[in-house]
Length: 551
Image (cartoon, rainbow, N blue to C red):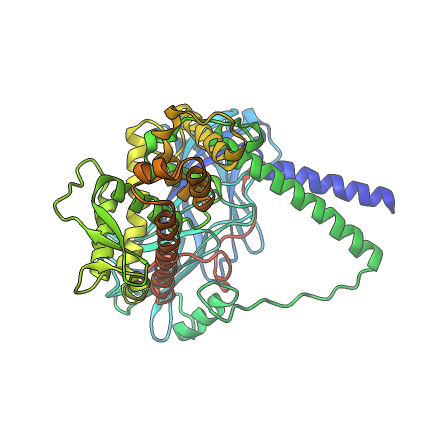
């Protein structure tokens, strides 16, 4: 029994190793739907192979559909069609060839790796009858990227177009499942984009509803679209009453169940450790923040957007809108765009200086300024809770601003050579990210710093601004005020008490921004107008399967 358990654990660990073999830098998929409902795929796989003899894609659960016109090329050179594929051949024997393995429920599209190392493969094939004709609408409901790939894709994008008919909110609705990302209708196409590296069980499941008259597919299904949608929404974040699902009962002894649980727990821990180390290495160049020492220098030249964007990445996408808004408001106070006073109840209020210049600042600063001014009402003085009330009815505008901050940050990071066009961090970018992490450690342990010289005073405003980004502004404000209240007031443009009230008020504003943005995304996405995708749900799809990649 023990031997079998150890063997099973070894198999699980081997599977874990396989799950992270090689690299899939990106998957870009273009799907063109013709009027008969056939889907013509062009997929570009940018990979680095370090084991195996071939690459394969799983296309199962095809129902009334079929795969045809399969081909593979690399660097413009078309591979040779080998017909029925022999998986057992060597790396050399498979080089420059492709073929199909046929099964009961679908096919595997296979081709030779040719060599270890970097490859960019272009794969083309057609799935007939991909669009299904329903009683009231037509639809595409298909898994386009399978879970369980040999390595987790770093970046995935999918574009779906209809022959001769631009897709828009007038004739189409869109939902996405299986991954963390965005779904949108733009430039006549349905577009899916990942926002983070895939997990082992991530996939891309597209669900599109089309008005009648765009397609004339012979593949019909005797259902209304809402019947399909209700199944797909089960277990998804689109559905407020998220279905938890039912556990299947198995005839299994308690001992085996216990050991199976232990094995899977060990595997899960291993996968998490590997994933966390890879996450930090991709941003910092080192596998853990433990490898980072204190840094007293302000990172990114004090730029709020770059610092907050990278800090958000380090914290795995945790919502930081409250910190970002607060940091930007402090910068605007410093620049004279905003001024601070107290009302009759001794509460902080903001005044607007329309004569001040936004020159040199990213556009999202003016966007936040304009939202604050609009929320201030007729007296043009922003008082406590005014922004929170305003944001509840202007959630679309708030969400648009949130998206603009990330766009502006990426523009700056690329302009400063910290980020490549692909979104990956350069060596210089990783070095600056290490500086950011070190600066966080310095500010967090600020009470331990013995030297508090005049040289530091000029950086106090930066300390407080970055304290906002790190979520420790209250602590930083208290520490700085304890050193010298008078110098504090002159440096950060507010006395210590007012500064703490500003921090409190901007936190409230930030949470309002976060809530309004989330509300806008969920309302839009649930209605099929695009927005955030759902990791769960998507049931009832065709195509796809499990596995793929190197073997």
